[in-house]
Length: 181
Image 1 (cartoon, rainbow, N blue to C red):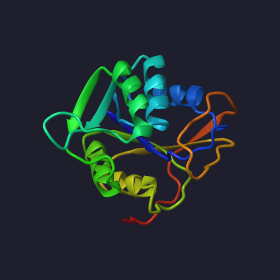
Image 2 (image 1 turned 135 degrees about the vertical axis):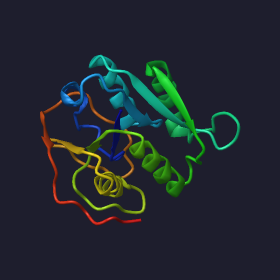
Image 3 (image 1 turned 135 degrees about the horizontal axis):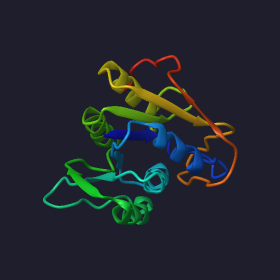
Image 4 (image 1 turned 30 degrees about the vertical axis):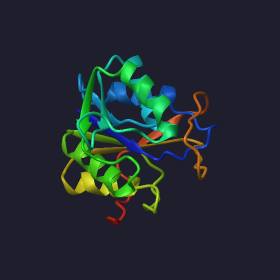
């Protein structure tokens, strides 16, 4: 399986759809793609996975028997992901707790053969743990493909992603950031 992680705060003008689909088409043949349910990047990944002809696996929180309620901004996106998904995995974590969500992402990464990270190379901060997840995968010997579209911009508070725009570049490995968090 391929885990996809990355920044949620991309500016709406950032384009990913076609570039991400092409990247996924070039990744390990036949592998399913795994994302944690949420708005923004996970939905874009789900759509790209289906367009690339791959199977989508969606990770949903389940701290009690059955799925947990996602934050309001993630609920519609999770519904679309469930429609796109071939498989759904339930994992006990609280989606409102950043540390629990990072732990869920770590578990997601441990279950995969490859990680695709939509990452600009910045260190992790109090909201975004992408750098930590990249370092976490690399420390376990899991291959990481860093994907950052040309012209991509981050916008604090943004969770939506554009669908049209310039090309991208897939980077084999920028300097590994220190593990934070």
